[in-house]
Amino acid sequence: MNLRSQATLGRVLDDLGATLLELVHGDADRGGDIGGVAIHDPLEEPVLPQRALVLGVGLREPAEVATLLRTLGRHDATALVLRAPLALTPELRQAADESGVALLALTRGASWAQLAALLRALLAEGDVGDAEPQTIGGMPSGDLFALANAVAALLDAPVTIEDRSSRVLAFSGRQDEADPSRVETILGRQVPEYYARMLAERGVFRDLYRSDQPVYVEPPGEPGGFSVPRVAVAVRAGDEVLGSIWAAVREPLSGERSQALRDAARLVALHMLRIRAGADVERRLRADLLSTALEGGAGAREALHRLGLADQPVVVLALAMLPPGNESIGADVNLTSERQRLADGLAMHLSAVHPRCVAALVGDVAYGLLPVPRDGDGEQRALRIATDFLDRVGDRVRAVIGIGAVAADAGGLADARAGADRALRVLRSGPAHGTHGHRVARLADVHVESLVLELRDLVAARGDRPTGPVARLFAYDEQHHANLVDTLRAWLDAFGDVIAASAAMYVHPNTFRYRLRRLAEVGGLDLTDPEARFAAMLQLRVITPEQRRA
Image 1 (cartoon, rainbow, N blue to C red):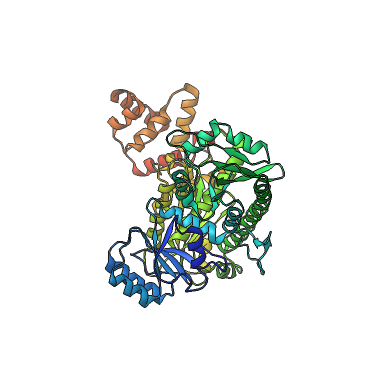
Image 2 (cartoon, helix red, strand yellow; image 1 turned 90 degrees about the horizontal axis):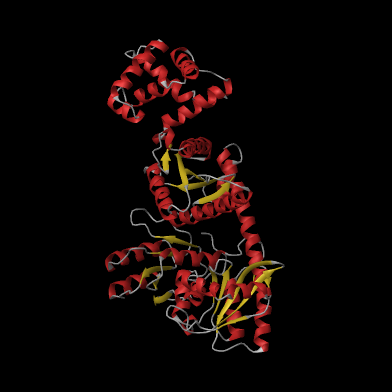
């Protein structure tokens, strides 16, 4: 994750402290701007950005933590985050003092993924490469956390800024003054489903999005609800609703504060539009650089240098969604948005693995570049990382990932990308081509299947037709409405096992044997000749009946 300037540890604690993070030991004002966020991997040598904020996932043993602190000190890291509760032993205190690395504790109930996402929102929004920092309404452009704190000061109430899906984009301090449902919302970075459903059933969202006036929401007075009243206002850009501002209040707002909230909504809209525009610019730039690097040629090295990957071995990952069964114009729009969200998810997943990873959507495929050690098995590491990503995505999105060979330098990137594309094509072709439902594959895993698909391309381009025995069997089936071709295919697929082949055809073995003798007679095919069997199998695999009739 690349972070903007002036993202200090003190700023992180001001915005996320009390709710998510606690400073256990160290100086929050030391270290200057945070240069990035990294997740500690005990099996890999750390590759950290300058003044990194390191997430120590799974670390518990004091001796292990002390060793890591000293290592992070040599890499000039800013802080190490561990899961609460954290016992500050004399050994840990000494290691933290010697290394100069602050120790932070992550609140119980908050996940590491939530913390990484909030850090990204807090530290990276609005970073579109401007030479000079810009302001909107006297605040840094895109800094929704600073804006949330300003609105909270105007209303004297804790505030959240949310998008149309009730996802928390930013929040103010003083959230402990609200109620447990607000804390649950912050920890989950999303309004809980039962809470959102309750508001929808009461017509709150309908009233909110129909008016530019603040909407006062009384507590429901039932278990599972909220206990402190809310006031909310929609955030609009013209006719488009971008999101909303929610404040936990003790009583309805006065006229002056209601007007202040309406004015704040207009200001938040400008910041949200700026973030959206910045994200679009950054995506286009990243996609252009990645596309240039993958093409190889003269511009590849310069593109890799701008991506921070010059002279670094990388593995190419190619991610694509499998299309839904029924598509329409609306489905195409949703599919495009889903592809972009999936590409953004891959970028975040890879950045947690290595700070110099890059991913972007190029056409309908999201490509990722994963730096790997020169002396390790880079493809196997990429296979594990890609599998973990799709496991996290789950079955909601049907997606597959092809993995190319390791590219030692810019000159090898085009071939590595071609290998990833070939593996991806096999996976997208489905189980009928030998993938058996696999979601991730290296080219080495599906090399034969890839060659078959490429042979089909050649056959289609030249207009080849079946010849010899296979052609005679096709002609016989067409004239007599028989199924000798299917019989031959089943027998070849079963390696000559009549029992298995007849079961696949749902016929009696004796019937199958009769058909087998018949096809040998009709086609003039010697089933005892291995060359004849191979030729028949190749034609059946490469020249399909659909292609023949086209």
